Length: 119
Image 1 (cartoon, rainbow, N blue to C red):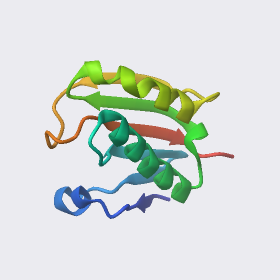
Image 2: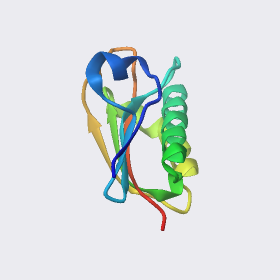
Image 3: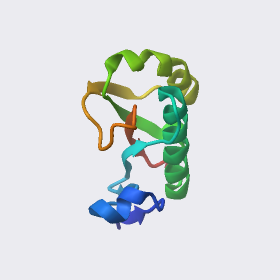
Image 4: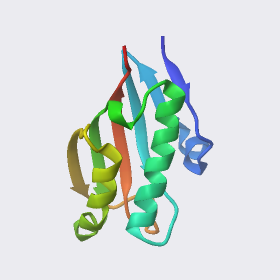
């Protein structure tokens, strides 16, 4: 059975996707940006949206097994490290950081995760 989770974000309807899909024992969370003036503000906001989607699917940040970070400026990744370390704590996922352009120049970071459903 497949479950689709929508967060009501502006791009979901425009582009035709959902925040997350639960399928095959995994939760696949779409690339998520956050609001704010700084990369750290946006990182925290994106993680909060991701956390909400995971909770709707029945899991948590501790269940994340893979994360991809996308930033237009790789130099802005390091300020996010303490936030990411605190978020994942004793359950760090496999991770990749890619430098690329995002959907709008106002965004400084986009985060995509895959989590495994508990049980």
